[in-house]
Image (tube, rainbow, N blue to C red; front, side, top):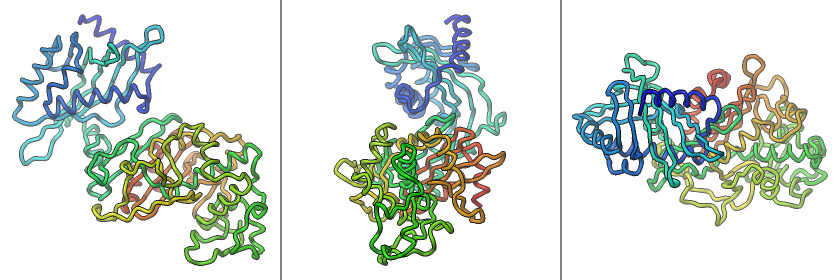
Length: 492
């Protein structure tokens, strides 16, 4: 490889960075990350050298800013065997979370190659010592597609720095790699954490950490019960019906449904969808074994209520003569390609992927309650990927007119109330007239969170399967959202 080739490769990197980066949800991105895992997690970290024969191109060239160059597949593999795998300590490489960028290369509209750029850290492990950071560096890889297989053709490793030179880049930040995230979870006795992030108004990353109850690594499509994060889905269904002129926010619900428990109460004639979505129905959260009762006049103050959403479900189903799940599938899930989300358990739910609910000791579990009918308020079964798509949809306007979206983000309850409710979302005021929209979910062994910030185009979805899950919230919000510290301060 000539000096001119190296210069051309760097120029190509600079060009594609501004034009064609692909997201972490792209199948090509995921495929290259699998190759990256073989290259480093298997060959470099574990010295499983044989995997390199399928990863490295015959015409491979390696350029290192401190140890020079290596030309050819066989010499490179041999250098790993004689050098990396023969050290007196065990080296390991960790990819800095969020640093990976990928840019496909096209020829006549067909992808023939890909540039991968990122930052990685190198650690040393010795007997009776914690792994310690030895260096951090940038890398650029050129992957080439041959006969539907991807091989690494060129590798550049550069800008190596010692920990003393880069104190801000060390793994004191728990979120920089999977190992540190899972260690952080274990200390807090949270078996599984699912995280989806939105950047620039698009779903940017989806990751699931931890292990399922039977010991297998939790897959990206782990199924979570997200408790009250069911409510935003039903809220967006309802607002889309309003947007299409098929439903009225302020029409009394008694025209379609009246609960027998309150049929003789005058307040039942006042109850509207607006009251439900802003939690001003006057109902308790749940009636439990008691008759449903009004605790205050609808529309006069805030009072969180799952019963209110169930009341709305009955009215919707009566008017449209369809079950809730069919309405949501037609209006939201199918258009958004949300294909792994259910309102209740049935034969299609793959229980082997389900995140069972853990108590606060992180060992014992709660009994799995399997609801068999749809609720508008609770028990949605979903994945972080699916709910990330939904959050992206809301962040980009939720399919609503500008006027209706403005109504959604306008405080509906009394200004004096501590919680500021829009339609379906809690509103968190931020500096410079910005705001975040928030909803959480909590039940035994469940803590789930969704936050979006329209002004910055950011969003965060976080699911856990532990009574301790909410202990992760502040750190997650501060790490993944640029306005995270403001949001955390407002919650304290």
